[in-house]
Amino acid sequence: MVKKIQDNLTNIVVVLGLIASIGAGFTKFAKMESTIEQLSNATAPDLSGIETNGFAIIDQDKEIAIMQKEIEVLKLEILEIKENNKNPLQ
Image (tube, rainbow, N blue to C red; front, side, top):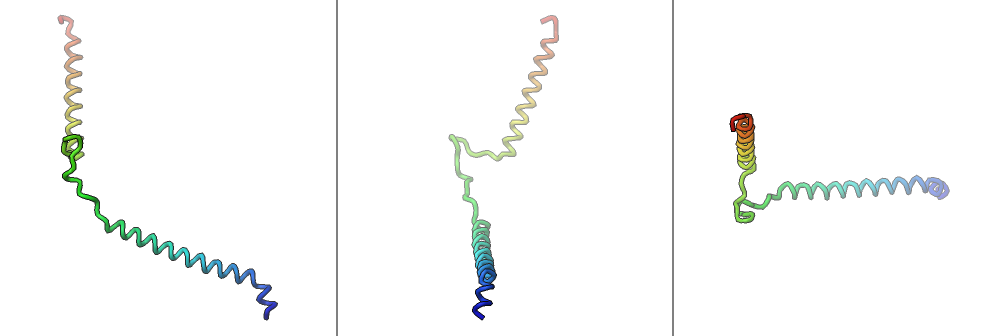
């Protein structure tokens, strides 16, 4: 019996190692699940009252719309300058 155990000692050690590593994997997985659940339950801080350089934070969509209108005005001014330069009487 001892001879058989000695012959299969490598296999026994490998099996015990696999069992230990699988257990460690489950433990790590449970820890990650716990962390994910904590992060999903966390809420972002309320930044509505924060001001930057004296100006209140503007909604990005409004800011983009304002910039698009400014670009349109600049394009029209460029077209107007081009048309004025076409007039040979000036």
